[in-house]
Length: 215
Image (cartoon, rainbow, N blue to C red; front, side, top):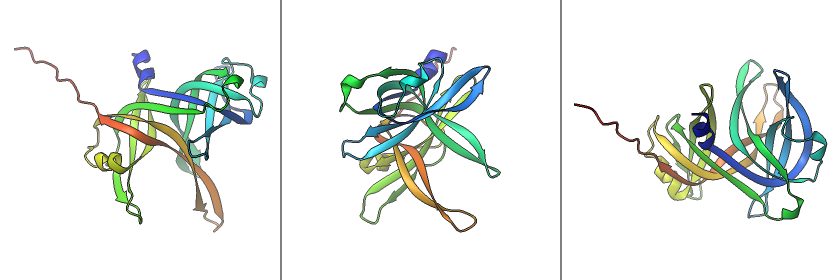
């Protein structure tokens, strides 16, 4: 069952380290570190993606700023208490990291998810008439846990999302993107924040197999 759960959430990234690892937390004596990975889009703009990994994966001093790495893992969500509220934190949990300086220019950002629609997708149109849908899907993880992944779809995919019912099982293919936004704090100051989501390139419903009833 664990292997199947690993197959429903797969991420492949290639990019440049732009922040050296810093300690995130420790579990049963195993330390976990976080760093930021810069990945180019086809348009030339950049996504800065947070990556979490175990100290057992590779030597910390090998991840210097500017190092090119290829990794595979899962896109995970964590609840982080902030000012009395629970904040959803998203990052890539790396299962393998490979130093790959020879592959410069071959930027990669791919994600595949298989999960359940958590709430009715929000379909709308921009002032310029572009169709867009926001959806949140729950992806099962081992030990009865789930990751809650926000996704954004455009055009025909956005329209297709309108037909999704809460609890319906779907497949999502796309890329992880970072997006800056501004949020006004309680004291009136404007803070710059970064949101992470999956930009959908393809999605489909999963038809559940009917279990035959014995007579």
